[in-house]
Each structure stands twice: as C-alpha cells, then as structure tokens.
Length: 137
Image (cartoon, rainbow, N blue to C red; front, side, top):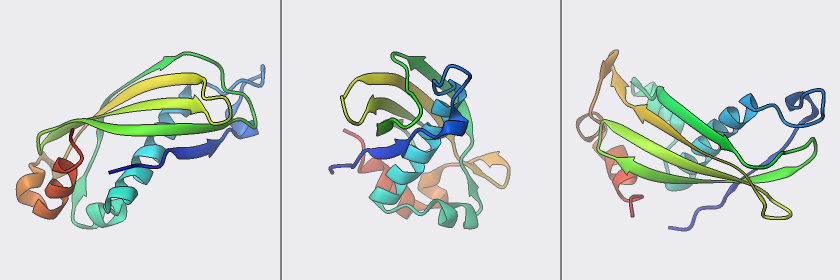
C-alpha cells in the first residue's frame, strides 16, 4: 500500500529564540503522523480507545539531522517496522517538503493495554490485528 506522507507546517510557537523548531516538537509530529498513518490504513484511533484499548508510547528516539525553521513544510513518512500483536515499533523520517532534505529520523515503541494490562490485539481486536499485520513488509 502507498502511504501519503503527513505534511506539517512549522508554527511560530514551535520555535525557539533562534527561530528554529524546538526539538520537543518532533515527538509531537511523530504522533500526528502516526495517527494519520493509522487513518490511511483504516484505523480510527478514537474507535480504538472506545473499545477500551490504550496504546502508550513505551520509548521514543529522535536523531536531528538538519534544522527546521518557522514556516517550513515538513513531510513525515511513517513505517511500521515491527509488530507482534502485543508490541510494535514505528520509524519516522522528517524531510523538508520543498527540498527533500532530511531533518530528523526517529522511532517510537508501543504496546497495547486492555483493562490496564498488556493485551494482545489478536484477541482483543482481530480486525485491527489484521490491518496491522497487512502493513508489515
């Protein structure tokens, strides 16, 4: 399946005193792009939560390559790197949408919780499990 990159325009409030996007915003952008990716494959995150399934971030990593400035459009690509029904990993690339320059790369690791316990999506939501499985290379 072809995924469209998530496009984000760097806002003024996301910058620091040097008019460079503050590093913490990339983590927020990962989340925005991840939710967009899920929408593209047919998963409504609100529906997931309404089913009582919570998807916490277990760890996050971001490596900054080049600066993003106020007003820049960035294209964020998301890839499901690992998935086993209980835990999964996404990778991200943040590129300047105009020049293609790589600004950041990162990963987030997640698990599924059902009733405040680590859960298996295969049992809790087989339809969603199938959608995730279909995204693996």
